[in-house]
Image (cartoon, rainbow, N blue to C red; front, side, top):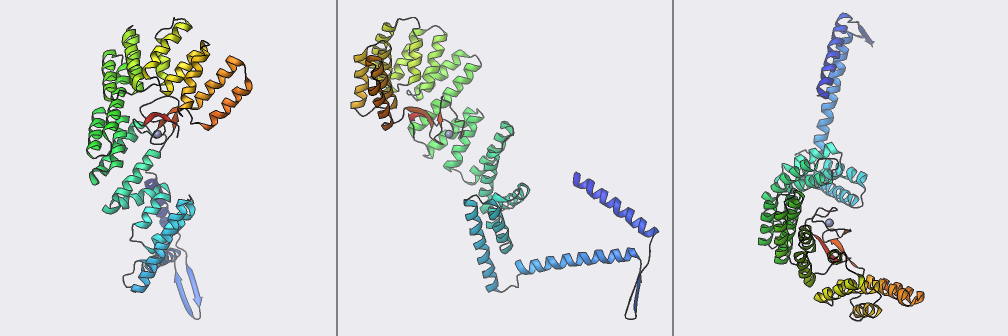
Amino acid sequence: MIRLGLYITLAIFLALGAVWFADHPGVLQLNWRGWEVRMSVAILCLILLLYTAFCFFLFKLYRWFKTDNPLMSQQRQASRRQKGLLELDLGWSALAIEDRVAALKHGKKALGFLPTDYGPLRLLSKVDTEKNIQKHLQKLMEHAPTRMAALKSKFDQSCGQTGRRDNQKNQENLALLQEMQNITPGNPWIMRRLFDLYTRQEKWDDATAELGRMVKNKTVDAAEQKHLNAVICYSQALEANLANQKSTAQDFARKALKNDPAYVPAAILLGRQYLSLGDKTKARKVIEAIWKVAPHPDLSQFFLKLEPLESPSEKFRRIQKFTKLNADHLHSLHFLAKSALDTEHWTEAKQALNSLVTTGKAHQETYHLLARLEMMQKQDKTASNAMMARAQDVPADPVWQCDACHTRRENYSATCPSCHSFGQIKWQDAQ
Ligand SMILES: [Zn+2]
């Protein structure tokens, strides 16, 4: 629209200029060695205009002759091709070390040597100006062998853009991924991105169907499928809970645990649901069931909330009984040791922590608790410091960590906030 306005303004000025010249034609006279040329200023302008157009045409002809000339000798063509490929290699190498200016320079040179090739366009589509990138991508899209690369570049661009509405971005990404899947059905990367995108849009049926395709394609194994199904159910349970549909939320949480009995967030959600209904027995049973297969500090916290009014010694006895459900586990022994320290049961605390040390299962928290024991029982600062020092030589405590991008998270979430992978945050030793 702005361009059209400029053209109209230019046309008006040209017309005004022509009228002015018609009213004031003037005369130009040139004498040279007996020759005499007379003409009006308007004619001179026209000659200059024609001369400029002729020069431009000549320049274009020269460019064509240098680059795309079919009459060029085979040897010369081969030499230009060689130079083009060299520029291309230099361009990719420059891009590898993030020197985008040099990559652009080499990319343009490569395009000059190889005007009909798609290689230079692929490089330029990564380093050129935004407007030119779209032009290069359009050309790559029109060429079947480079269409996939162009679609992937567009997908990457869209993912990297900020400030756009999520909904709009997701719709665009979905269209790109679906087209990529049409070109290469069964590609694991595309299937995984589609699955993640469906979950982000809360299209649970589509996500489950895509998961089924991934299993058929052996992109995920049976155990992973069960876990991902559990995370889908858990997400639906959270949705129902937010909508105050308590009974639906419970159903989904139970379904999640049926799929993956070691899935801690679903157990805590279900436990909370029971507790909010005043059903302490059912809440306790859920926590006890999962403690047998997957003890976790969040479950310990929930277990403590079940009996808020009990005395410290009652609490200790209850924890002793509870941790026997999975007696040798790291979190069972830490939970027991902490409670023993709080109630000054030094022997029990030492026994629990030493059993981790002697079996080689000690983590940093094991030594932190041993250090606390030394201080509380004997006020021995030297021994306590020695324990703190030994904590540096053992594995760090388990954390929620994303399997896809390895980012550590304070709290669990179904979708990784860093890389948007779904169902990849797991409780594990820090990597
Ligand atoms: Zn991640």
